[in-house]
Length: 134
Image (cartoon, rainbow, N blue to C red):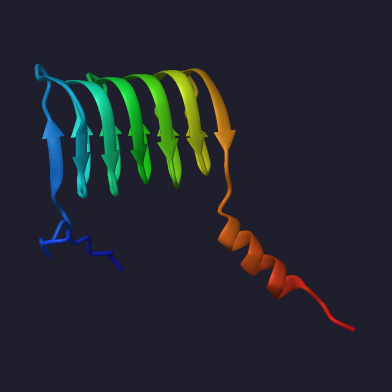
């Protein structure tokens, strides 16, 4: 039911979340395997195999590459999400977005170019199962 994430050293990442709390500002690049929540400010590049949440007080300026992302606060930059991007009603997004799925609540500000790329593997599998032969 729950997928267990492990790092190269074998550390179990399930249930662990990195937190940048309100009042904290980080300038630089940030990379991790676990999920991350930002309620402070992060300026730089962010890469993760997990989920990123930018809380209502959170502010992110830079580039993000991750699996899933929920935005309630402010984002400016390039956003690359391999699965789902959720924009809550308080979200403000400026920049360029690439994702597989996009969910936008009423009230969210979405001032971005958006490219949605579906999962090619799923399309190939679906085409083979629905293909009929004579």
